[in-house]
Amino acid sequence: MKPLQIEVFTAPGCGKCGQAKARLRRVVEELKLDGLSWREVNILDELDYAVDLGVLTTPAIAMNGELVFSGLPSEKAMMKKLSELLGATSA
Image (cartoon, rainbow, N blue to C red):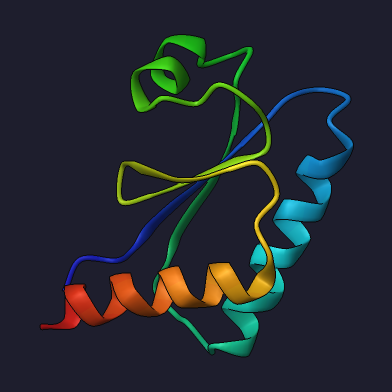
């Protein structure tokens, strides 16, 4: 099974970006997820890639190469989306 790839799009000086990373980290720990591929993407460094995915604001979160959250999602929303994706990838 291929690991779930999570990308957190951030920008320098973005206060909510740190909150998004902390929330995502808590959700991953609570769900006891292993084998995730995780990376932080500075949109200034990878602007073309961010635009290709549809990232217009930060923070934004992509999972498996698809933009799933624009803005700061709740932990509940993150848990729901991760559960959906993990259910789909394990089938």
